[in-house]
Length: 431
View (cartoon, rainbow, N blue to C red):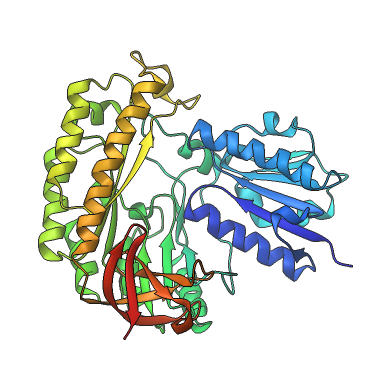
């Protein structure tokens, strides 16, 4: 009987990609993947450490794994493991803690699990190259991810990720293209190019290149379907890049651009190197060129010293911008970052209130954007699972559309007519 394994994942698309890669390694070695609640023999918890809340969720998953199977061996990896391996190793039931780089050698670590050191976490900041994880498929998903880059050199004052992911390191162009072609040949209608800071792609390679160069090489390759880009920093989205994306019908009209604050002084203390005027012009220029494009923004509220006036300026800026999606992050102190020790920390109650107000702005923007498409046709990638007789599909411009189960199959790329708007997004009928 094969050993059962369950992998649970918190955090970003890079973590999701790496979990699928680890799962593929394990299944090829004879492990049988089961649901987390089934009480697997081996549980891999791929953690996130962006906020204190994700740290807490990671610890809770470790405890739950032991409740489902007291004999389970728990392996902890991911960004929380990279930052605090000692603390995690002391939790009951944890057999092994490995860092982000060590994910590529998970099988080797497991073969010597009882004899090996309990903590296998290297100094990721010393790594100058990336050892890319590869995939032949993206299990139980209609969309696949390809990792093009890892790490970050920005060192925003609130962010722990450069310490957890190391310096920016790019996957070679040929390897990215090979992965795109392979997943496309395996039938995935959408592939997402992901990383920690993809706008910095290629700057570390010799000779240095950029994301636009990579996209042009992908365009020359043998693939079908559509491609979507992950988050790109505003200073790494020049006109040459966003105009190329807009002019390329094979790239989804979807821009995810972190704002973080609507006040120049707060941005400066965040170590964000752009102004509000710069950001305002960037978003409006994209919208002017492609009004139907999804534009997603990130914003942090409750940053130390954020006054009521500065928060109000953020609200006013958001109200004025033509965006479609808003991700709101309440500020969370991360030990080891400059922001954690800044004066004038904002109370949790105030942060919660401000976050709620920002989410209301974001919801209004989304509903207004979505309503524009009632009566029009959109191309969807249908996702798996069904609820109340409907499956969810995702449009190229990142709209969620509910379509009757009887007319759809998971992983299908199909065209629908939008017939109505509902609380969960839009309702569509197959054309």
